[in-house]
Length: 131
Figure (cartoon, rainbow, N blue to C red):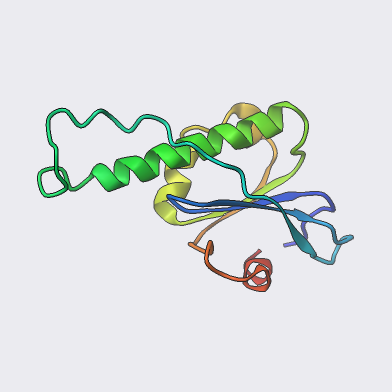
């Protein structure tokens, strides 16, 4: 895929959000990391009913879902304030699905493409070849 100059690429999983900007001129891709925002997960529940992981094995998943929702909110703000004009998202399938639930229509309109893959621990080169 050819990504427009200035497009943002978000690479996410349940605990990490990395943002890159394409500095290359079409059809070349040159991803530069621009931000690693501090994301505070939304409340994943109080856990009053179960106090340990054995009794509540999905607690970890709830924390990751909260992170995905908070990441989507951060991206929504970038779309609403005009910082983000074109957007490509790469995330593990579960995080991508959870994030989609929270994408504002303004952000949805700017999505250029998606890849359901976990690349948060991969190099910029690997990310670029995935697009």
